[in-house]
Length: 102
Figure (cartoon, rainbow, N blue to C red):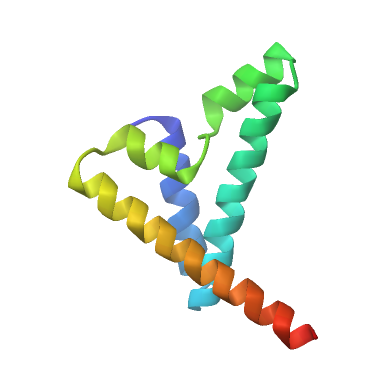
């Protein structure tokens, strides 16, 4: 198992244990995925070799990237659907907060 998978598993488990409520856990996982995607954008568009190689070595591109890298078949499909459902819950919580502020 590579460093990116270990990092992702440790961060998700720590986040879920630290944030015991569902909404906090969903926000943490979504924020983690958004952070990984921002790092991937920087890696692809910054043009500095040292930074790009550091990001490539130590950080995954996204949560689905790690899922597809280490699983295949039905397990990958199930995990991606869980990921999509988690983002639906994230969208629900975000829209609910926006409507309450109006």
